[in-house]
Length: 237
Length: 237
Image (cartoon, rainbow over all chains, first blue to last red; front, side, top):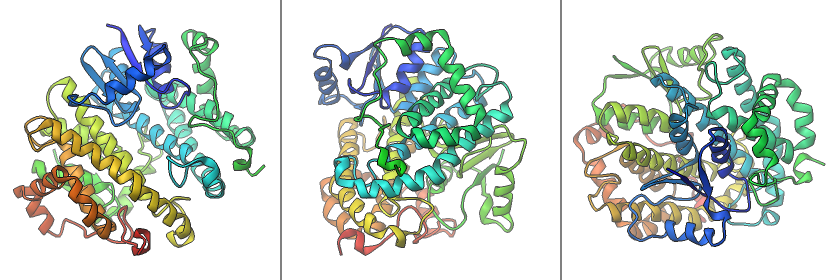
């Protein structure tokens, strides 16, 4: 059955974490809102009055009658179906735990340019953004990347979980990509401290399906509307 | 097997969402860090050098050799074991999706008093907190509570999912409790618009095991160190 992914058509955003896993799985999917009329179809589905399990927000995945929202939840579902999550109970919870930690990290990345309100323009919270980004780059990036570096060091396989790639490997790849886009100066300096994270990023980028995806038009370029934004002033430039 | 819950001993925080479900399940558990020497035991476990699946942060649950962190992940595990999550696949993902939406809400609640950095004092980000709280109360609380009101209206059973109580019912109870503590004036005005959410709160509070728990010393009172804090100036007082 073909997967229908519903997400904002002009940004990578949270949808990108789902796209990467769909691409790695070689899954048959359609990125609904990127087709003509697709965005209206997304709104119509979200607002369908009788839908018992309406999502709070995109991204969501539709598989037949099943609708699943919340990025980490979608990745749990896809990972289990496409062997990108271990089969054991302990493996499922550990993999999902890493995904949820990445989701927490992503909220903090977003809030570097929206520390006051997601409904306000960046320009209207620029001063606060500078303060938040300074704290984020000094304290939170090292804490999160240091954590994943430790997980990689202890697992010893080059992947976060077990002997093979699982969903959080692709998500961490995207985090590194995004941080390099948003904070290039800082990442150039910081990433040397996290060689295993960088090596994982490179390994994921070279997987044939991911490499093909990244070269394709299906990969939306980073831009100033997404979660990762490059505002030089937030790096103290 | 006895559950070991690891969480900061002096606050409700994220641990409270786990405590509520353990209490409702009538589970045999120990709140490790609240016993003498327990907090050191928690740190020792987190810093154990060979622990492959070390948590990023509390709360975490230890069940034999299994360690599970991330609040929603813990609730998924406990819910499945104690019939507080439906048995069907669709039910599992829907229930977990609601839990994750509550987790997102909780981050925003926390950030009303820490919009700049979780490592900084409130007093050092008070000005920004006022701005963030204003936006949060005007836009985000109605959006989240309105969403859960709709879910309850469509489910028609008085619970969020299916015919019986599931983990997000207890989490939403805690959100209402906490918002009333943190923003009493605003909630007095707002909650009339969400009668089903309030009714769910009351229904949960009256369940025998929850009622007994709330009266017990196991329930830590709200205080100014937790996620829910009462700073009158954040309500525009």
